Image (cartoon, rainbow, N blue to C red):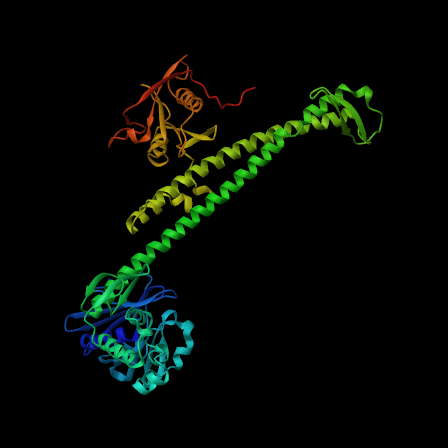
Length: 523
């Protein structure tokens, strides 16, 4: 209702009191879709900040406004130095104008996403703020009143249909009437109720910042969950604009961040699934080297220039069909297959490394989304955006190294810190209170984490493998046996000012294991 006719009527009355006799001192823009108007009189200053964006337009009145040293531009300069004579509200319209000395008129057209400010002189257009609305130059600010017959006869002829008689009401007055059972009343009773409402709108008791259907609204009526009650239209509009921009700005940036992270996570999961699928295909296909071995073992059983032959496969203890090239000897074909086998091995290794990287990225993104879900308020969101800026960058070189290695066992993910500094990042940023935390006892080494899964207990076999990793990536790597302590992450804390990787552990248990990397490729 901040641009409703009845609110603007109160606003312009207040502005007329404030601005009459003040001189236009400055008019400039330093942000897209924002115009700053400064007025002065005998040491007194007054500012109008007009935000005229496509999704939100509103006026506010800052007590002071410091102009940026750069990126600001003077606008509507011909009116500078002119004196405000009066502020005039258009009848039944969301617009008003300042009548200035020198024959100037400054029109405020507050039509939602088509809001604009236009300067005229002696009835002729001079300039406008939003150039995209060029048709506004054809407006006549002195002829924009909209007279509407609003007597009982017209009301009765429309059968009490509000939008036909009172199009300026908007949704909040309509909601107010609906709460009074307007539709169930007789015509005369409806008329009386509307007249009572008009009295409230013409002479509001207060201005209300309220929450209605989850949105912050400015109202002349006490509807919804009233957050603030004010008695000055300038203060009310300031409070509303502040609340609205804070709320919608936070929500918009929060949703944008969540969408970006979710999109990146889904894309990474897709790549991992494709990589795993390709790995399964390569691992389960018959090895090129095995086919070559069978051909070499059956050279005397292969007729010259044949295209297909049945041979005994000693790997599977079965006879199967082999396709051959008629222009290639079996020896040459076997030689080619041995080369392909070598390339296949390299491809598998590359795919395994790619799968590991994608799994690491998924964990980082999942943890970032979990951290974002805990964010409340603009300040926390800004801190989050700074901390996780690398995840929003599209530049590959901007991506820092993942601070941990990832291993998987029986559906559980095991994370191993790569250095003392990375141990801190792993434990403080990528570990949650119910994750299991491990470390080789009494020596320096990697922090190891088993990621918690709701409703599942970590199997002993998984715990032992994680403990072996903790021992393997520690100073006890060469010992025959190594004690490894483990405890839920909630019992691990980092003292302020302590060295990188240093933590205090409580309620730990100890497991004795042989240092080893059970996931290491051998042979």
